[in-house]
View 1 (cartoon, rainbow, N blue to C red):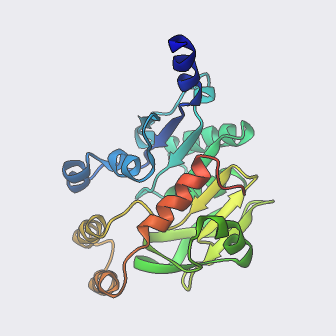
View 2: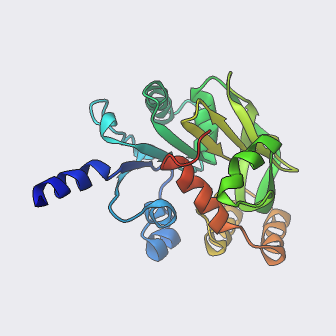
Length: 255
């Protein structure tokens, strides 16, 4: 009987991969154990196995490993999803393979954009930076879809991007928009979901990131002030985003 229970438990355990597309900042490394720790805190549950692949360094699961996984998360990055760096092209090839195998893939920020690219859509520069807390407005069909999760129709989330999805891939569906960004979320084929914002970020992570962007002259003072001001006006709805992302990745949110 003990052996049967052990086998059954092993069958039910799930394995997920985090495809890390950015180097860990010192702050996130020291405070959270790196971005892998941030995503694990948001999404991991007891009994699951989570594995890290540093995609930005060219580390990706081998083709013969893919079937071991129930799903993947593709993280944010300071790189452009539309660029042709070798590691990005390798990542795009992997994502095409995951799409063909109908693996669950959740893309966040850069991950959202590079998924769009892999599926045949278009990404590029937005008109302006989006930094701070932005309210996302799901489409009517998405609101109906999320009704079983008791998720509100307006979802504040932390944003940090200057690129965006320009054109959805064929057969993909837009799920949400905001005042600044036309495609804040999209789904494809029931097993792919992209989110432009950062459900995994906390306010302190964004504040540290804004300071680093300012130091590197990637943003101007007014960008930083606007981002910091938004943090005083509202909070990101981390619990709703956590519930939504977990429901999709674990297969309880039918798209």
